[in-house]
Length: 116
Image 1 (cartoon, one colour):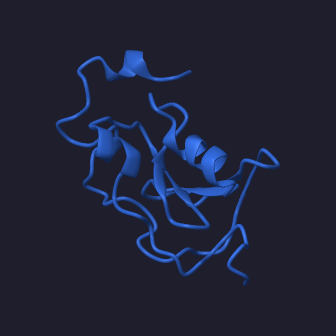
Image 2 (cartoon, helix red, strand yellow; image 1 turned 30 degrees about the vertical axis):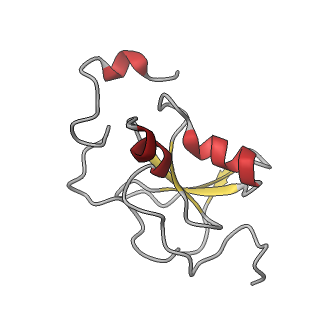
């Protein structure tokens, strides 16, 4: 697989939470992992929508859910969901990590702040 392929199975995730939310003190609802570079970003329901922003900034079109028990992929370019190869571990954030997260940063009225 070439280095410009949309999916790189040997690249680990960037961390256990949204890299951008953690850097700015934000919070997320659910997490998504870039299938090319491993960047973990927050979903489109989250206030900052960092996974989509990552795609727009980098052109990396394929993400995978980074939620425990989920293995679906989404291709921003084709706007299609599907399946794909197993990516380098870990394949989700820790099961004991809360969603929304991170612990201590989620406002009490978090459900009202979600993007619909």
